[in-house]
Image (cartoon, helix red, strand yellow):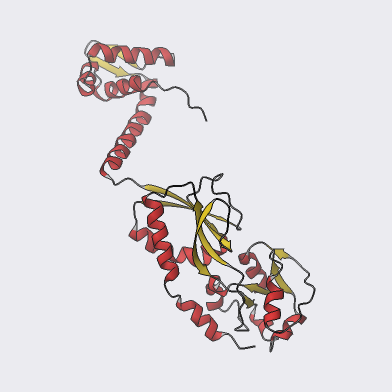
Length: 304
């Protein structure tokens, strides 16, 4: 984007003159001569093609155009002055852009964010959600929280939380599941990672059948389908604890399979600033803290 040239000196001269309704007082405030102020204002009027002041024997009066321009300029200069002062004093808000997989954001990050904001009130966190497809450089992101094995070209990666998968379904379907083999009589909802159900079934000692039906690119969408009774989802209970606590989803078996974990990633070429360092230290500490909800969900599962 190419911004049009703005005559900042002339705008400052006009704004000060309009507040004081005097070229002389504006000159004193800006530490220049009265002639310089008058020259700057006249040049601005020529550029705009209209008069901003009516010159009176005892001072100045704003025209309609001047009255329209003054509030916007005054507000802009006030905001610039406030921001410059906050930067100089070290109290300016620090912008931090973070992308996260939607499942992780809703199931893990959102409940913890109030604590981060309380600890770091000057960090303006901008959070973007995705389905694990993200471009750190192209989207101008400081961090991306991804699911996988931790290897992405040109990025640093710090492990956060492992989220094993287990069958989850509506209570009505769970009543039909006495053993893992009973799953074969029900629709198995699956993600785009084709090896997840085969790995879980193999771990349960069951030959995987051919999988058919819809493929989901979000555990959240798959969980909603399971809640509606469309089938059994293989999903991370740690990210869906609210649905489990409310009884909308049931975990029929304790058996889990791990296919990866969530990672905090950033570009190797990026030098972390104070906001990035603060967020990284906070989220790593949170990831290391025990999650009582996981133990509760496991205890509620039946052994298959």
